[in-house]
Length: 149
Image 1 (cartoon, one colour):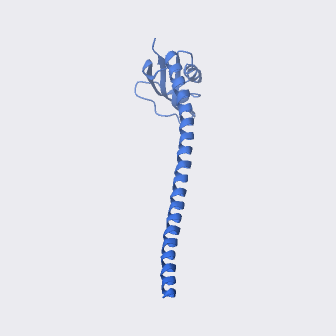
Image 2 (image 1 turned 30 degrees about the vertical axis):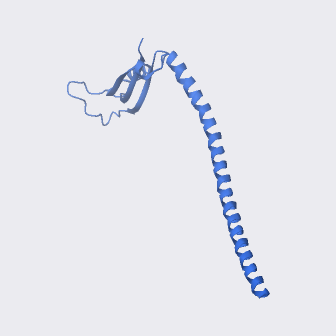
């Protein structure tokens, strides 16, 4: 009888030990999950702090740009589309006019220059004289961006 009582006590003790051991393992896993969540939240908090600094700098830049009148709706775009054959001096004058200034700038999209060879002059447009030797074919596309007052 004593051995049966000892066996039952052993099994009851084993049951409580295994139950407690499983609870400890489960709590250890929960602790690891919570620790990783804390690390994740701290990392997000640091990233948000950096992003807030960047956003502050961007907002300061936008405020300064607004004070200086650099808003998009305060600029007018004038398209340029030139595709003609002309003398080199005319090309120099036109390209020189695309220089920037404080109140406007030129935003180019295409600039193509080609010397017209005297052996095969391109067909001229109706109503225009044939190009002379030494002429340059100019293709210039873009826009003048002018600040409104």
